[in-house]
Length: 304
Image (cartoon, rainbow, N blue to C red):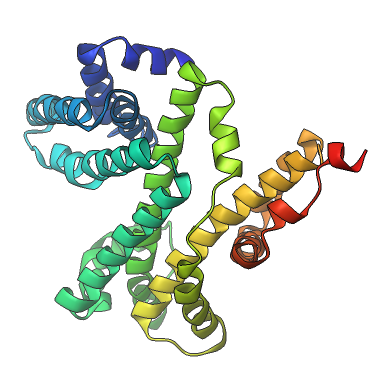
């Protein structure tokens, strides 16, 4: 990872090549798209929005040409430009000037909420829209034997997936942007400020006003029968506070000088029992907005 970051920082040409090549390769190995976005983010963080935009424009042209030559279609390049590089450029520019990971995550939440709003305000029946999109691919899974469903069972699965697709897409976008920005910031710290990213992450916080907006939404989602659009909003809020809870947990374990096994255990539990651990961390993050655990828990040094 350090070697890739060094290549990106060698110069404009190397940065353009890195962003473009990683994007094209991600069509074969999807996770590489994160590194493509992170490379664009690193340039923006280090050299500013103007240089970041120049790299994105050049990469857009190069990837469009390559996409047309390889697939006779420029649509893959358009997806990268609109859904990855431009949002990353915006968020990296905000992080460069604000130096606040919390503010960047809140900005990402705002963009994700706009996406949800677009589907429910302008498309109208979002479930019907997604039903038309996913019906054929889902039928292909059934026909190939990868999914056993027929008749009413197929219709139930289709309806359930359709009702969740907007929430899945919006939360996926939020998590993708956060991961890309985190990698870009980590690369920057790795090269120019070792240990800086960890400290910045552990100090991350949100504006308390967000909790006043999130509280009724989360309560309605958890205890009531909310409309479909509010469920999508609730999922976004849950993921947002999950990220804060993760930062709080890291900070508390750092303060008490906990063994690395504790951090590893949290991530293992997250993989094994994701819904429960994710909800617990989200509650931790939400509560920290009021209780400020990181300030009130003494460090191991203070206790000596």
